[in-house]
Every structure is written in C-alpha cells, then in structure tokens.
Image (cartoon, rainbow, N blue to C red):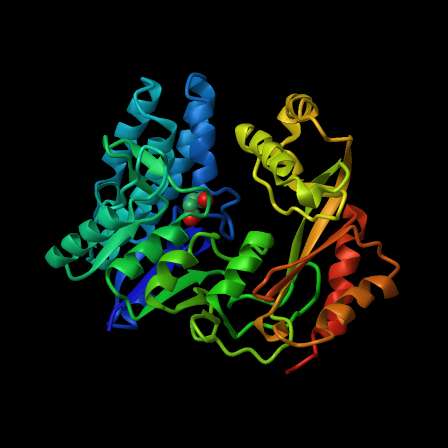
Length: 438
Ligand code: ASP
C-alpha cells in the first residue's frame, strides 16, 4: 500500500503545524512519499514564504529592504528548526541563498523554489526520511511543459534507492538544469506526478479545510460538503474559479484512475472529499462557482455560419496576441469571443486594430461587464428540464442573462451575467438547488 501525501503551506506554517504533520505521517505506514509546499500563512505568521521570496527578488538591489525581507524568511525556518530541535544544515543553506541573491547570481525561479526546498529538507530531517530534490526528478521542456515520460522514469528510479522520502513541490528543471516553476499552487501537481509514476493507491492532499463545498463558504454560510466528485467535475469547477486544487492536478491521476482525497491537517479524522472515477453524488448539482471580470467582443457580419474563414482569421488574431479564448457563443449573423479582461487589457487596442483589418466584418462591439457562473454536476446529464429550471432562477431574480453555454458532456452549464449580479446569482442558485437529490 502506497499513499502520496501532499501538505500545503498552511499545514507547514510553523513548528506546531510541522509537529501535526509528523503525527499524521507516522500514524499510517503507507504514507511513504511526502510532497510539501513552502510554509504558508499561520496563526502568527501573516505571510507566505513564497510571497516573501518573490519580494526578496524584487528588492535584491536594495540592501536594507532585502535584509529585512530575507530576515523574515530566515527566522521562519530557523524558528521551526529550533523549536523542534531538528538537526539540519538549513542555516548554511539560507546563508548561501542570501549571498547568491546579493550578488545577483540566482534566478527568480530558483530563489522562489527555495521555499519548498528548505521546507522539504527540514521535514525530511524531522521525520528521518530521505530528501529528494525535484530539480533532479521533475523535468520540463524549454517550452515550460512537463516531460511526463522522463519525469516518470526518474521518479521510479529514485524510489528504487529509497523507501520513504520528502520531496519539495512546485518546481522542477529545464533540460539545462535551470529551475522551472509550476504556476502558483503547483505543489498539488507535483504530488500528482509522483502518485502517477509510483502507481500510488491514494493521493492524500492535506490542506486547512475538510474538503470541498457545493459553493464558496465565504458567500453561502455552511454550504453542503461534497463527499465524492468525479475528475471531470472537479476540473470544470477548478477551471471555472473554485479555489480548490491547482487545475492541472487531476490529469496525471486520471490516466491511472488514482483517487485523490482532500483532507484537513487540523482535523485529519474528518472524511474530506474524494475525487475519483465513477464518483457517486446524490445532489443534482455538485458545485456552483464562477468568476467576475470577463469581456465579450462581438463580431457582426451577415451569415457567419457560412464563413468559417472569417472566424478562423479572428481566432488567429487572438492567438497571435496570446489571449486565451474562454467561450465563443454564436448566432447566425454574429459571434462573440469571451476573454478574461486582465489577459487582454494591455493589448486590446493593438488587437482591435488588427481585427478591423479583417474584411467582411461589419461591426465589432465590446461588453466590458461580464461575469461567468458555472454550474457543474454529472447528475444533470440526460435529464430534461434542468437547464430550464436553472435559467428560470435567473428570471425569478430579474437577472439578465448575457450568454449561455452547455458543454456536450452535459456536466456543466455556463451563464454570463453582469458583474453586479454575480453574488446574487450564486445565492439564488444555491437556495433553489441545494436540496435537490436525484
Ligand atoms: N508555495 C507555492 C505557492 O504559494 C506553491 C504551492 O504552495 O503549491 O504558490
């Protein structure tokens, strides 16, 4: 039996949390491969180490600022080490990192990765586990994409030499050995690659909540807990805005149908949420989420349906400016492109001037006030009347719908509304559907 455990930043924020983590790991023989984040926010720790390290890099040329910021980083690790009497060389490591930073001899990615590096080194020493450096195991191409095959082979090889190990999350290396980071929250993804490579029976992801809820608890008091959710549903929810796991976490696990359970390191006995193939959920809707801050750019021309070439030209412009396209609702004489505003704002004018060069387009208009609500639930599939009832909820609340999009798998429905109607929509949907059991 092999379990991969990943502990997030709040689970490792201070000595008290480190001690809890040790207790959790030692309570189960199968917890042999441990992936960690850098220490995050805690009871008396207002900052995440990762944020502090980014700030250190930015201030590397301002001595007084750097000393202050790096001092905060040092004291976090050294306090944990001292309070738990851990034998480790992290004081020397910290001194070397600071020197390299002062001489501008360390890249931003490498500096930031030291957050997880030191966290893993410290925990490995505390547990008496081996320390394995992700730099040697998690391989990226120069395009920043992970080389899955190489990564898998290296992980398998490394675990032939050790039985139990702690591994820093969040980074790996390019083919030339330079450090490459995942995007923020990426330690979740590191855990998945280890789970996949080692054919783990379970991936336990420890955080500071006991799993996921049907809706954001900051918006809806005491929402239903989700006990089980499928990989696909979770991907939809995290892509649409639910702050759960990093959105790339699931793909490596799906390949081998490895289940992932989200657990609370402050209450490890609670059941959490399990993500797996063929998850059974009794609610009609599994989750409700969304994001504000989108815009719609609408193109008008007579009989678009017949002119795929024009659509292709428009999409080419978006791709040239590297603006990700979220949705493309269409009608016979128009189509809209929905994008996140913060991904287009700085290049909107240039992009528009290129779009205007496309012949045949009669007009281009913009709507800067779009929020997207996403309703996810595999139990909605192949049932008549669900979207009707969903949409009438907006009508009852007198909320205008700007666009509607349902994926072919019928596990998600996306509704575009005005930003001001966002919270009201989620509350209305939750109160209408929270109790619907199938
Ligand atoms: N420490 C990194 C972050 O704060 C990565 C992680 O925790 O997964 O984003």
